[in-house]
Image (cartoon, rainbow, N blue to C red; front, side):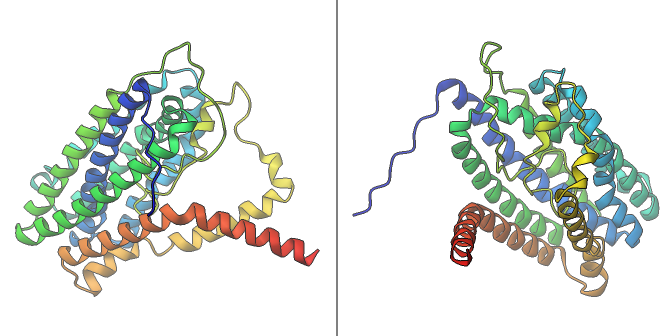
Length: 332
C-alpha cells in the first residue's frame, strides 16, 4: 500500500498571504483566458493588418525592454507590496476601455485604439512584472515556495482552461461585436479581483529579512505582461532588477566571454520563433475561417499541454543533467 507524506501546514503569516496569492492567480487566469487571449482575434475580425497585430503582440515587449532597468532602479527604493498593487491597478484599469470601443469607433479606428491602449498599458505593466516577482520572493519564504507555486500553477491551469472554453461558448452564441464586449467584461472582472487580492497581501514585517537564494520561482503566471505567446513563461530574473544596490544593471562586458555567443544564439532562437506570431490570428480568421469556439478549444488545448509540460520540466531537466554528466564521465 502506498502512503503519501502529509502536506505540511503553512505558518499563519505565510498562509494568509498564500490564500490571496492563490485567488490572485485564479482571477489572473480569468483575465488571461478572456481579454488577453482574444484581443488579437478580435483585431483580426476587424480587419487588422499583420503590422497592427504585430504591434499588439510585440509592442509591449519593446516597452518592457526600454523601461525594465529604470523600473528596477526605482523599485529598489519603493515598498514592493504597495508598488505591486498600484501598478496592477493602473495597468488593469485600461481593460475597461476595451468594452465601449465598438460603440465609439469604426473597425479601423478600433484597431489603432487597441494598439495605443496596449502600448500605454505596458508602462505600468512592466513595473508590475518586476515588482510582483520581487514581492513574491519577499512574502513567501524559500522553504514554502515550491508548495505555493505548485498550487498557483494548478489553479492557473484550471482557470485558463475553463475561461477559454467559456469564452468560446459565449462568442459563438452572442452576436458580434457584443460577444467580444462580454468577453472583455469578463476580463475586467478577472483583472479587478486579481488586483484586489494583490492589495490584501501583507508584509512579513520590517524585522524579517527575506532570504536571497537566487533561484527561479517557477511561477507560471506573469502579471503585467501582454506578450500573447510567452505571457506564462517563467521570468526568474526580474526581481534581481530591484537589488542592484547602486550598481550597474547593464553589463556589456559580459558579452566578451563565452556568454556573448550564448546570448546571441538565444536571441536568434526567439527572433525566429516569434516572427510568425502576428500571422496566427490572421490565419485562423481569414484562411481557416475558424469559429471562436474552435479557437477557444485550441487555446484550452495549448494551455493544458503547456502547463502539463511545465510541471514535469524540472524533472526532465534534472534527468538530462545527470545523463550529460554520465556521458562526460564516460567520454573522459
